[in-house]
Image 1 (cartoon, rainbow, N blue to C red):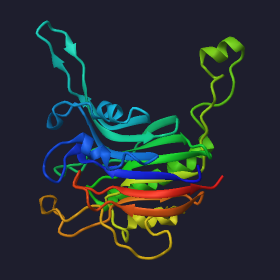
Image 2 (tube, rainbow, N blue to C red):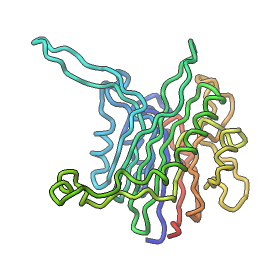
Image 3 (cartoon, helix red, strand yellow):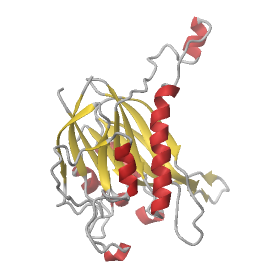
Amino acid sequence: MSSISVASFNIQYSLGADNAYDIKRSIDVVRDADIICLQEIDRNWRRTKMADQFAEIQALLPDRYAVFGPWLDVDASTINPDGSVDNRRRQGGQMTISRYPIASSRVIHLPKLDTGPTMNMWSIFVESVVMTPISPVRVINLHLTDSSESSRIEEISFLIDQCTKATLEGGAWNGEAWDAESMEHWQLNDPAPPMPEAIILAGDFNAEPDSPVIERVVEAGYHDTWQPSGTFRPGVTFKTNPDQGTDSDMRIDYIFVSSHFDVIDSSIDESTGASDHQPVWARLKVNK
């Protein structure tokens, strides 16, 4: 394997430009990527008829590894006639899918302000350690708030700081137990997941290329894969949508990489109507 392909796509819980829900359509446009970062996955929402989209996507890609991280987790239970509780959680979140094993993953919540009457919800990033055949890489799947630029700046600053701290923290565990029986009890004799320095930072940033949010990402040493040669290509990842207050085409979805990668090529699928966003693609060479 000389390269890996990465796709990032906010699928808007499978709601397409035609106002129809179709999870298969959403997945078909990115299914060929080696690593897929999806945002806005529903579980037990009325709008998607209480579907478990994480399970549905796994069924559509049965040969892949996958993790799900909820930014929202609230009660969606019902009480049956016999008094028993059908315990369900209403969740929305991000899903990371990989051809290669995902050694570890975790969900980290980003700072949130109480914005009063303005709608605002928790935001997260999902960190996954993907064991590519060349070397382990850390995939950060994120969705920043759309509530305000100041909130996004706070979120991205926290995220970047956490990405740096993670290599000092190490992987999911370290060290050894005091005897062989304890090693097996805690399964510390399994391979310890690493915490690689190589990072792919992908998702819905809700910020345009000249924004302070993106400037912060670039200042931290991450490279925008959409401009690997420095040639300006505007691209569109969110098209004009007056219903959402958008009066111009925008680029707000990205794949950034640390200096451990070379960008071979990149693209934006501006033709699909599977969501209100467009999928972003990059082909990367991992430097050992």
